[in-house]
Image (cartoon, rainbow over all chains, first blue to last red; front, side):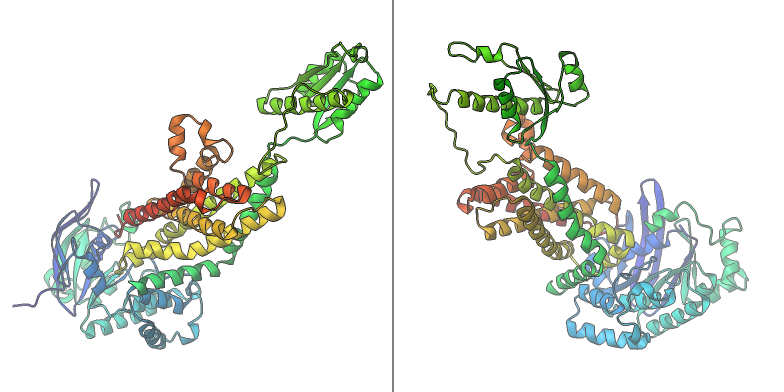
Length: 258
Length: 367
C-alpha cells in the first residue's frame, strides 16, 4: 500500500475553445520524487503544470496537489508549493535583495525571517556581493538559480519547475540539476518540465507528452529496456516520430506561453 | 494579511522611485499640460482685427474709431478699406469686423436725430461673432455716453458680477484643467500597473503565491495616492502662480477632496488594468475613457444643465463632474463642506465602488 500521492491527476483535461491543450491526463507522483514532463513545445506541459499550481482551472477531470483539490482549494495549494515559470519572473529592475524581500513578503514571511533567509540564500548562491545589484545585470544562469531559491523561500514541500534551464549553457544546467537533487534529497517533491533529452535521464520518473496526452510514463531505465534503446533521445524520436523534432516550435506554443 | 500588503506597497514604491525618468514625466507633464492648455483655452478675445470705411472723415468719426481701439479688444487694420473688398477681408480672415461710418454721420449727431453706424461681423464662428458684437455694442454705448454725458438715461442697469468681476475665463478653465489633468495622469499611472506585470510575467509569479486580489489592488493604490497628491500639489501651485486663479476657500479641504478624487482616478485606472491585456491597450483605453468624457460632459466647458437629458445622466456618473463643482466652488467662491457635502459624498462613494469593482474583476487565475 503506497502513501497518498502528493500530485495526483485523473482524466485531467484543459480546452481553450476548440483546442485541447491537455487531454485526459492521469498520473500520480510520490513524495521525494523527481518527476519529469518531457515533450516538444506546445505538447501541453506548461498548461498541465499551471493547472496543478492553481493558475488555470481544468475543463474536466480531477487533480489534487498535497491533498488539496485544484478546483476548490487553490489557495491552500499555493501556500504549499513553489513555482518557477518558464519566463524569468523576478523583477529585473529590483535588486537581488529587493526581489527576495518582495517574494518573502507575499508569502507572509516576517521581516526577521526574510533577513535571515536572504543572508543564507545569498551565501549559498555566492551572491553576497551582488546583493544590491539589479537582477537585470546578472548572468542568465545566476538569474535562474536565484529564481529557484526565491521559489523555495517559503519552504514548500512540492516545487514545480517549468523549463527551468531553458537557454542556459550545459555547465549551468548540470549545476542546476545538482540543486534539484539536493531539494529532492530533503524529502521535497520536484515536478519539472523539459525538452532537453539529457535532462530527461536525470529524472526519477518521467512522462512523455505529445499533443496534450501522456504517451509514455516510467523510469528512464525501464523505458530504455522496454524499447531496447540506449537513450531517452532515441525513445522520444521513436515514440513521437522523426517527423516531429523535439525542438520544433509549433503554433500551439503561443497558447502555452500566454 | 498586513505583511503581504506591505510587501506589495514597499515594492511599488521601489519601482516608482527607481524609475526616475517616469517620475520626471509625472512631475513635468502636468506643468506642461497646464501651461499649454491654460494659455490656449480661453474664451476671452483680444486684438480683434477690424477695418474701417469712414465716409464722413470728421473729428467725430475719428473719435468713434478711436473709442474702438483704446481698450485692447479691437485692433485697426491700419489701412483704408473699400466696400468691394469687405467679403474678401472676411474670407482671408484679415478682419472679423468692418465699421461703416456714413457721410452724414456728424450731421446726424444732433439732438432729435439719429446717427447710424453699420457693423459688419464675420460670424462663421458664431461664438466669436457674438463676442465681437457684444464688445462692439459696449464700445458704442461708451461713445454714446461720452457725447451725451449730461443727459440722464431713462433707466440704468448696474450689473454687479460676483466671484469673477473681470469675467476672466481663465478662472473658469484652470480649475477644470486641474480636474482633467489629475484624472488623466492618475488613471494612466495605475492602468499600466498590472498590465506591466502581465507583460513581464511577474504577475504569474504573484498569482501562484497565496496573495488575495484585494491585497494586490490596494497594494498598488496606496503608493500611487502619494504620487497623485504630489501631482495635485504641482498642478494647483502652477495654476496659482501662472494664472493667478484665486483661492478663496480652505486649502486643506481642497487638498482632502483632491485626495478623494485622485483615489477615484487611481481605482478607475486599476479597473482598466484588470481588463486590458497589454500596456498599450490599457493606456489607449484610459485616454479614451478619461479625456473625452471629462472635456465634453463634466461641465469642463459646457454646463451640464444645458445638455440633453441622456447626456446629463452620463455626466452624473463622471467623477470629474463632482470634482469640478468642488474645485470651482472652493477656489472661486470659497464655499466649504456645508455646501459641498453631497458632491464630496458621491465622489467618495464612486471611489469605493470602483476599487471594489477592480478587486472583483481581478482574476486570480491566468485565464
